Image 1 (tube, rainbow, N blue to C red):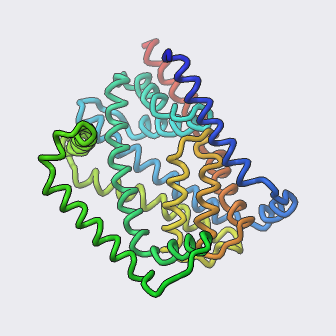
Image 2: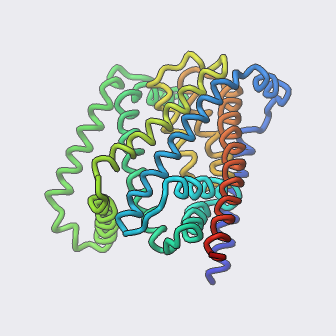
Length: 330
């Protein structure tokens, strides 16, 4: 298969996934009732959430300048922030196209080579993956019983008295499996499938160790944690906007956030349109929020961010083009 046909096939699959999730989420929706929920929403809390979201992106932009500095390229936080906004803006129209667009913007404003910019993005993504895994682990420990009981109920299985201890059994099994793999690592290393996995893990580790090349690695890690705290707080404050979700606790919000983030990670057009709605709706169902209210919440939060990024991304695009024109004319 040629590269062009492969790209077309991948794009078609991504749009098909998004369309399938959107259909599943919104099929049978009472649109009049959904509109009523929109009118009953306290958009002041949505505004607070969006403000926190902007802060998180400023932190992301500032963190990125540390990686550029490690490569001996001086990029202002303002230019980095414009690039971040452009990246999110493009993601709504070209799935996974934001990373390239973000780096291209810095090429225009700071002559940062595209390949070096993409290398920094990979490092950022690796760090973000670690942060997400930490959050998922926290959710596993804090909300395991809720998630297990929900799955148990929906599968029609009978609960047993030992379910509450199942998470400890699973944790023990993971420890035992990990110990066994470590003890047999030399024997497993010669097997082709494990060799490939090991190469991937080594590449992952090398990407993470590149953090030590920045001037202040501790600050870099602190900024990474702060970015994700802002993401969680954004969702938490938005919960106060709807009567059906304002009673949820921070720990419950953490679970919904983790599921929503997984929904965004799944390739879909519109920066997770459909997949995000489905994941958040399912997360809210865990805590007794009706499906219709979950759809309303996900639609409002996703829609508000989409409008914000389209506006800020369009403004940033004009700024970058203006700066590029000034650079070429001077």
